[in-house]
Amino acid sequence: MFPNLETDRLILREITHEDADAIFSCFSNANVIRFYGQDKLESVEQASGFVDFFSESLKEKRGIRWGIERKGEKGLIGTIGFNAWSPKHKRAEIGYEIHPDHWKKGYMTEAVSKILLYGSETLGLTRIGAVVFIENVPSNNLLKKMGFQQEGILKNYMYQNGEVYDTNVYSFLPEK
Image 1 (tube, rainbow, N blue to C red):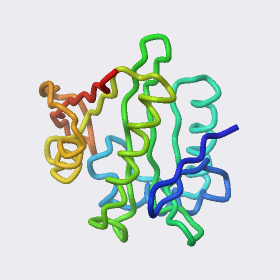
Image 2 (image 1 turned 135 degrees about the vertical axis):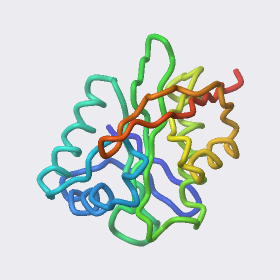
Image 3 (image 1 turned 90 degrees about the vertical axis):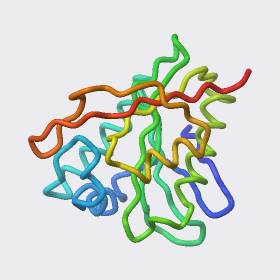
């Protein structure tokens, strides 16, 4: 059973094939993926492949991804979750994106806060990492606001549109 989570304004829920259009809307938007390290989606079929990938990641305990939906409104505005999940080593990396129509409204702060709590209390994570393009100022600021500590810079770590970028590496160490 997928763990649905709630915040004051959001429902974090399982992503299904019915969400492929919303996934495509995010991952085909150049503003969303410019600091993502992947190519822009070209079709809804590719987005449907993401849904399968998220499902397989959970089955194999490699990751968990929630769809972000506003309470009282159908349709995803973004996704959030853990990648590179290692239950044995009690660690994972956080990843997220939100459609530009919903930027600067505090939604991601709510979502990050909720999954940090879920990760530490339910999954027992003792380290939650993040890797963020240095140029992605909003994401860097969000992570610092949420209590992540910058550990360093990974040189030439990510490629986007054929160009190499440095990234900041962060950690969140839940108190036990």
